[in-house]
Image 1 (tube, rainbow, N blue to C red):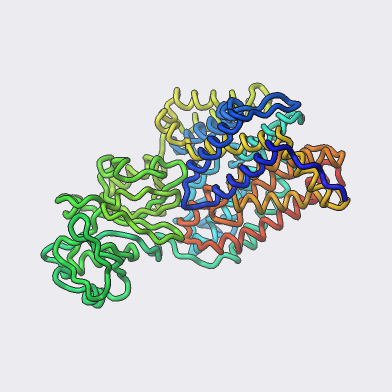
Image 2 (cartoon, rainbow, N blue to C red; image 1 turned 90 degrees about the vertical axis):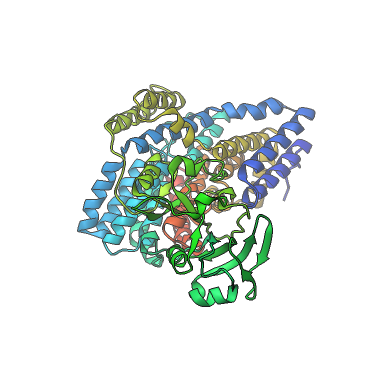
Length: 609
């Protein structure tokens, strides 16, 4: 066995930096933006002082920063913004009405229709607005039909992932892979280049999601059924409060085990641990853990006040509204509140509602002693809001938060047909090759704004800095690994270790590794780093690289086995009340089924069998 020569120092360092990047991407305690910026700075600094001179030219810091203007990045951003026009105009509302009719007739048939519909929509539009619109609709309809929403949301979400893999514009992963492959000299991919193998996989996956996945998912309670989420909240103790002058043990005895006092804040900076003998005084703030419905009950029983922000006089008074209601809202990936605080966003002033408590899946929150409003928010956080009906409606229609109220109240505007027409023109222009998809998507954004299907601030709001930085970092790493010879080394090593296995077996193994990889780290990073390696492996084997690229693309879209693997997974994680193991229980068999399917279909379609 002859091992390939080690890459030069640039290639070795490129692989080391890729390893560091993938490690940082998995660290939940480090913001992804910080990790991406760190990697970009290290890469650009290294190439500034030690530029790489290779057969394909010079690689320096300018080459790293040029990825911000990469056509794939521009196309993805434009498509995300254009898709926003669909959700802002309520263009997806007819989908909700159609589904409502089927759910009244037969829940099982309705689930199948839902899976088919979303898998037909997601190849042509961003799946995040689709899921944001459908989550409250599906929760409401499934409950009315006597079904658990947890048996519906995950299958529908995964159907959008399957549909998105059918076209080159279906997901950002597809566009990045196609861009990398084209830059390496492969033929141009049109919008339906790999539609046949992807559609076959989608058909088999939808059958699984319809017949098997709901049976693997145990019933989970959701928000409208009194969700058993533990919220971190703050209670103000007034002079008339039952708590004033009593110990923690006495208060706990009064309310039972449903309220856990974690600490007491006295004045501005005195923190007292909530031991049973600790005395509670007037003016104290109690940091507690409790379920949403219990918080309001304790407020009444203990004569305390849930406070949303800094302790001022107005915070200790009830919000002046006769139609008070509580609502749970989720922070979606495109929200302006991601990595921001309620205080910085001036949330109370904008919407006139109070955030009473915060739930973060899988985490024990240690709220800042200043205020709940000072806690940075993450994607998937659930906020317990209190306010009037009109204020809640305003939040829902603003599109910055996902209100989990289970209603069918979707926006209705006359621009909805126009928004659909614009998206059809964008897709048709790319499919018929009248325009490159990048230009067609930019035209779509401009038309959406000019026709008032959306405003510029809504278009900008739909973009995520995190998504852009991940794409640019992934492209930069992929290019560096390719041009420094590191990809060539890995590919040759992989072929050497395959011990002469058939091409189909090697392709299948690469797909499985990519599919597992994409559920551990960011799927775009897995796809962009894996694409040049897949191409070189094919070249080493003396076969057409196209099926290897398509296999990498399809495998990178199998982000189904963990809740962190894809942004819409995080949305349904909270909305459906899922546990981490629910994704593994239903998603891992689907991943393996599709890997086996693609391992046969892709070689068959491209003549490798």
